[in-house]
Amino acid sequence: MKIELKNIGTVKQAEIDLDKNLLVFCGPNNSGKTYVAYTLYGVYKTTKYSMNTGVAADTETNDNEYLTFTLSPQLVRAILSERASTVRDDLGYIFASNLYFFVNAEISIDSELTDAEINEKVNNLIIEDNHQSLFGSTYAIHKRGNTNFISIKGISTFPEKADKKRIEFENNLNCNFIVKGLITNLFFGNAYIAPAERVAINIFSKELSLNRSGLLDPPFKIESNVKSRYSLPITSCLRVAEDLSYLQKTQSNYSFLAELIEQKILGGNIDVSSNGDMQFNPSGADIKGLDIHLSASMVKSLSSLVFYFRHLAEKEDFIIIDEPELNLHPDNQIIMARILARIVNAGFKVLISTHSDYIIKELNNLVRLDSKKEEAKEIMDRYGYEKEDLLAKDALGVYLFKDNTATNLEVDELGFDVSTIEKVNSELAQISESIYFDLLDQDAE
Image (tube, rainbow, N blue to C red; front, side, top):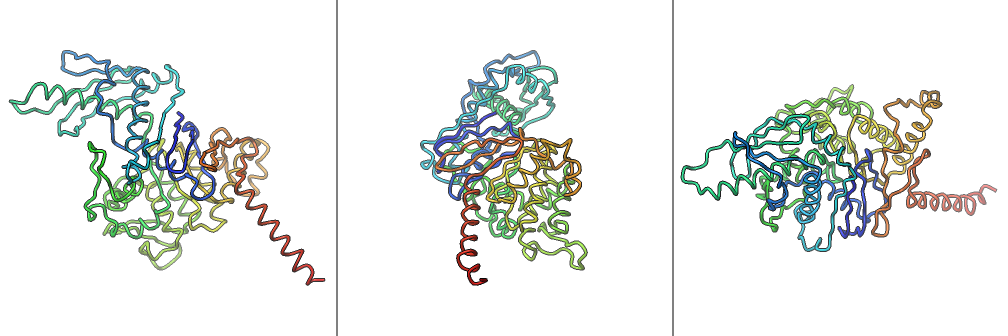
């Protein structure tokens, strides 16, 4: 699945391959990495769908008054194409900005899946559930495995004198929204984002409260001028931060990744107080229940990610982390690179935006070890690498943001080079040598 973006913020052109398991965005400041990351998050998370009722056209009504949709490859592609246009129209909401700033934006979704691959994905979908529509009506949804048919039936009672045309229109509209939502979720599942602002959100979530602001976003926006105070990624993080007490009741199957971050980097565990506040318990210390604002910067930066893996993570989630190196010493940045590999190898899709030479170099080490894993056992043992740390070169999609364009960098058995970072490293080395040999070495003589 490739997404092509044009004229979004400072980015004139970008084509991102979402079939890659680890996406790495590199490049100078103000080069558009966050614009693209936020847009991709919007593709996964925005709840807006087209009002067009003609997309899901292959329907029939059976004897039980179910409306049956044929989820054909043609219908799937039409819904994915429509998804691109609705996200484009929703950019003002995603960025909490005037849509005027995105008037020339273009988004297209190119599914390279064959008809057989689409049918296989659709046939594996099994649903037996009820759904409440935007208008308050309730619908029963039925989808068996090994078929491409989905049946939907309105099970709520309309008023006795309700207009039949209105009921028919609402049923068709809601069924279309349901089908579009299911197809979208099938190809763009759940997403989680850790924006660069996560430190402030973890400390000041109560002061930044969505409810107190009076600007809590409605789940569905019919008017295009509905605006939020915060961008969609910030709003999503605030929703989690404001509901920690409730969300912690759910346990994820991926809590081992939370424990990995706690053990390898934080040196303690993240907890939630009875008041719903994030807390830190340092290992081997008498102090317990340390309020998050009193903890180290790296704890503030990673606590929300720990909470996500312990309570929210689901299979095949798309995880976006802006600057995973935030507040981390170089040794912990190297560890973070290995943890990112563990996350990918656990079945997640991950996107990072990074300026860290340490993370990039360690990702390259993981690719090199994977390309020679049969011969690398001795060196892996020497430096503490495990097989879960390795990264296949084909799993990486690396993009250099420069000159208003995202360029796809080649990844081979040796990894990849980021020219902008290598240039800075080289210049700094030259300056250091010049200072030493031209000044200090003379004094030594």
